[in-house]
Length: 266
Image 1 (spheres, rainbow, N blue to C red):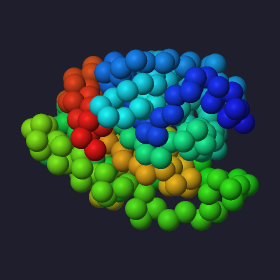
Image 2: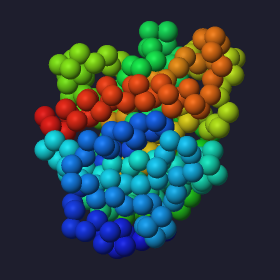
Image 3: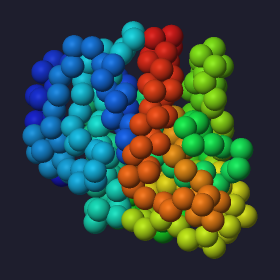
Image 4: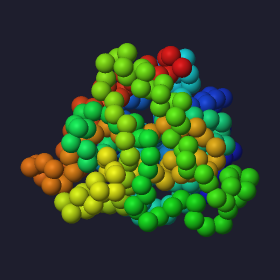
């Protein structure tokens, strides 16, 4: 279990009410945080650690725009061997230190021919194809309900605010359905065809457990994908994590502008 008392002590009287989770290759967003306090995941008792290249495994707490934010440079994937409940405990620990609003980002493959690498997709709906759920197991009614309504898990008001800001900044932002697989292998061409039939616009290996856990403990959440490639069978290039990081870095500039503007205006 995560030691909440230890977590709060490490914050050194900082009181962020908004958090950002950064996906593969998107850690540069944290560079725009002013007066940063850095906390390594390993310094928080009971907190998991990130093992994937492109994830620093630390929090950056400081000012972005008009708000004090907690930015996570690195997340936890089920393919790393973590049990889903660990993601629930991590999100609930954010709630317990005062987080009320969560911005989740990821790098994802496009299943929609109109969504191109380097562009951003706001997640409007979810398909959990991982077969796993962070809420499985004994329930703590003090943290959240046994059965969670997911119909408004991707906050419509916040999504609309991001769309309006993107329009002002002339940043291309789509909306679509995100499908999660467990990974770590990339999807096959046949799977990509099947996912498109199901109505998915993008596919990735994260994010949905975090959204479920945030809905469970009552954190308002918006999630978005930086499109890094087309799915298998939709492009000639061979898929690789290096390609994901390279393309995510290109999209990170637009993502940084968008998130900075959001916390400056809202």
